[in-house]
Amino acid sequence: MEGLGENVKKLLLAGVGAAATTVEKSKEILDDLVEKGELTVEQGKALNEELKHNIKKTVEENVKNTEKADPVEELDELLEKMTPEQIEALKERLLK
Image 1 (tube, rainbow, N blue to C red):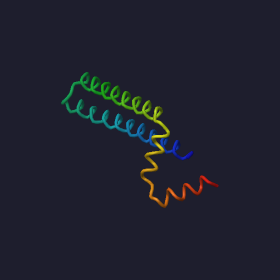
Image 2: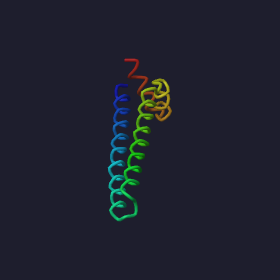
Image 3: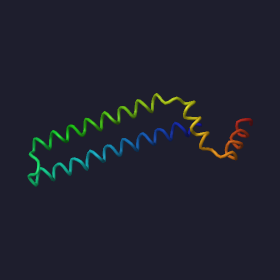
Image 4: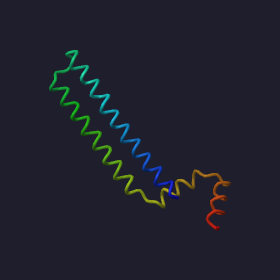
């Protein structure tokens, strides 16, 4: 069961990594648009700040949701995905 917490942690870190990559790529795109004159420097800065704020808010909400996840519900979800053979093997391991 220890693996469940570790998997949630890995998933959370992957989400944070994806958000960081999105911020970096978006900044590059905005910088290119500013360079081409399609956006003013101020517009680019404003869009970049808004994007950072939105991503930060999304990450914080996901962290809170992950922390509040009910372990019983998580276990139920895992059990629903298991085959009858896997459930039987789990029962045997728990009875040992």
